[in-house]
Image 1 (spheres, rainbow, N blue to C red):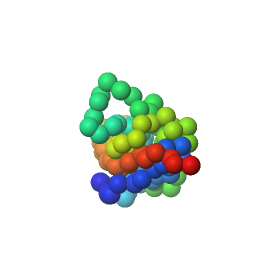
Image 2: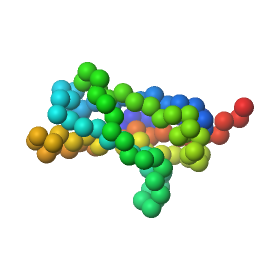
Image 3: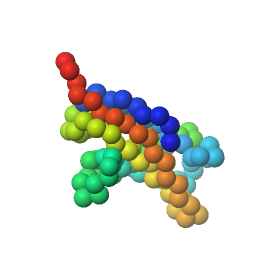
Length: 103
């Protein structure tokens, strides 16, 4: 897990993830989730969605509407990667802090 990315509420947020061994993503599916820290498993902050691979990475983004709907605070953007052929699974996280947009 790397540092904390700062997002202003209402701005889009681009991200990219890859396999830890930086190997081919062929046969792998990546689904993203968003959880608030500390975790409250009863609240969904983002509908889980599958990210389409590009080369050997999964680029994606949170929309302006998605970040505007979040409360300020710290979140984990979770990347769950599953290979249906081999049953391998890998989960990585990126910490993001949503701040108030003071426009």
